Image 1: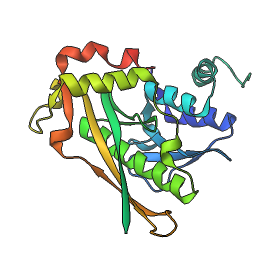
Image 2: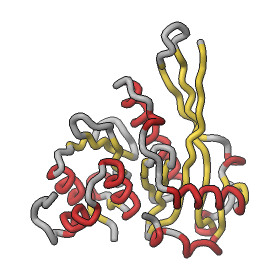
Image 3: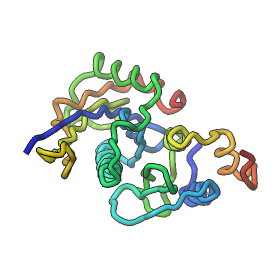
Length: 82
Length: 142
């Protein structure tokens, strides 16, 4: 099920990420101190929807608990457990 | 100027109403409303992370690679697909495997990267599988 980009940003911020929307036509940047940058597909700007493969790859890249991340995205969890 | 180049493998698949583009060497995923947009989006994403890594003195190829299942899909498309005909309606395309070339100029004395350029290989290198394999799309993507 796709996730809305604003929900993704809300959850990513819980993990200490910031989003930089400048510089790209198709992508924004996601950063966390001490970690490599990752990109955020935003071809429809703030109305973009993110696919499951993107969310899963993001979690792999930063070794985040995928189930927890999805629960936070769906609003089933209000805050991080891990 | 000494040049160093590498090829990054990209797999593009349908996922619901979007196309998902995945650079396997960097485990970097982007998306687009059309096949071409998805390819353009992942080329831009690669450019962004390669530049940032190089600016920080990091080797982009040290990033984690995509899991094995995606590599298996990429090789399957490469071996069973056909060259993408630009005139073909993208609704006929199920998956696309392609390559992005990264060329880095190296400082001759320091072996340090000075700049890098990205280039999507020509259409002949864009290998597509057609609609018959569509059921292998989004649902099985990890």
